[in-house]
Image 1 (cartoon, rainbow, N blue to C red):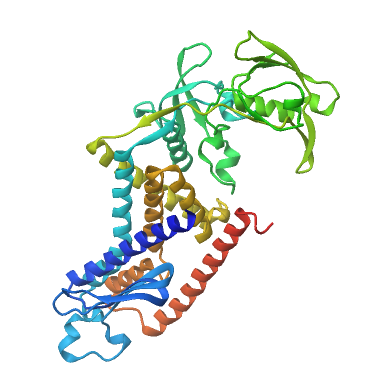
Image 2: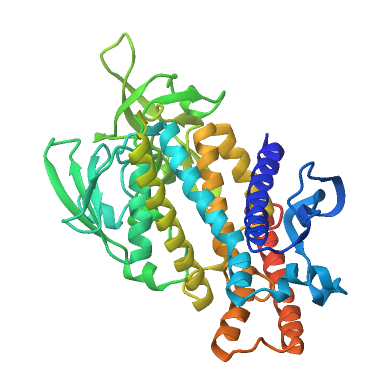
Amino acid sequence: MTFLAFLGAMGLLITVHEWGHYRMAVACGVRVVTFSVGFGTPLLRWRSRKPIAGHATVFMICLIPLGGFVKMLDERDGDVAACDRSMAFNRQALYKRAAIVAAGPLTNLLLAFCLYSASFWLGQYESKPILATPQLNSVAQAAGLQGGDTILRAGLSRDAMHDVVSMEQLRWWALRQNFEQGTLLLEVLSGHTQRIQTVALTAPQAQEEGGEALNGLELFGLGPVWRAAVIADTQTGRPAQRDGLIAGDLVVSVDGRHIDDAKQLRDLIRTDERVRSSGPQIWEVHRKGQERTTLEVQPDRVLEQGRFIGQIGAHIGAPAETVWVQSNSLEGLALGFARTRDAMTMTFDMLGRMLTGRASWDHLSGPLAVAEYAGQSASLGLTAYVSYLALLSMSLGVFNLMPLPVLDGGHLLYYLYEALTGRPPSPQWIQASQRIGLLMLLALMAFSFFNDLVRLGWIR
């Protein structure tokens, strides 16, 4: 599944990118010699049965699916017959050359918009926007949020609050707040008092100025969706089974402390002071067919990353409550445009943070991470896979617009210089910058590949 999802993603995104270059070149009257998806040994090679007049393009699919290229007729690559010189790339007006180069990444951005819109049209089940218990000493806890609270609306100002129908939408608003450095406003229905109030969340100053990852809701001490504190299953011989817990038990309280949700219970098991002593915890559970049952549960003491934590050998948490989310045609287009715009803004912002040292380079992902996430999204269903393809397409478009000499953005930088000075950069300068750009790109690829190996646990 992962390999096929990866091939499908790379095949689509590369083909669309190169098709953008190809179609713009044809429209500008430039002969395209080769259209290749992939590098290395050609696996398939063919010509169009109905070639465009003046063109005899060779189409190829090659062995290594990590890129592609469109080779155009160009006098800098060799002699060109006098009758064909009008179709050479180097003979075209500046605006035509710039349009051909820009067409690739812009086509990727257009594809991202189409895919995001399609994901909203397809619809999917998403988690209800019900909060799990916030982390101790977090922004969310200080604001008075509790496990079981439902988010009704969110926004970055009181005049622009939007309905929130799922946890995924709430995560997106949190990410926007992270990157726009604003205050996230939440309209909250309390799970305890059933009162509605508006809560303002501002990211911790240390996080905003530091180089750590910006993690959306996690930055405020939120993250997991709300799940009831139900024992899903128990492991043989571990405390949960040994002390009488069974699958389906709903934990009501521990040592007299009311339990709101599964996250609160897991945190209590891991960090409770009783883990360091010999005394058991007093659990009150609601069991089917009975009123309530009181049990004594003694968590095991387990050494993890240099400290002792408690474990009971059970999976805790009922399935999250879900809601079907789907948009009509116009809503899907509007949401697709907004999501593409926001994703681009966040990506450029993150690149800026990485270049200025305000964000960690650990964010950089390579082909192994792309393959892993492609497989994971495909396993979640068509809508999740389409959304991931949209994110990849947008990322590819933005990456290729970077002003690195070997990328499309680097070539556009040359054309900007030519437009400002009236002459192109010298061949010697271009060759030197291309070498430097290639070394930088190779270093970037090596670093991203290393990050993948660390993230997957292959290197520690």
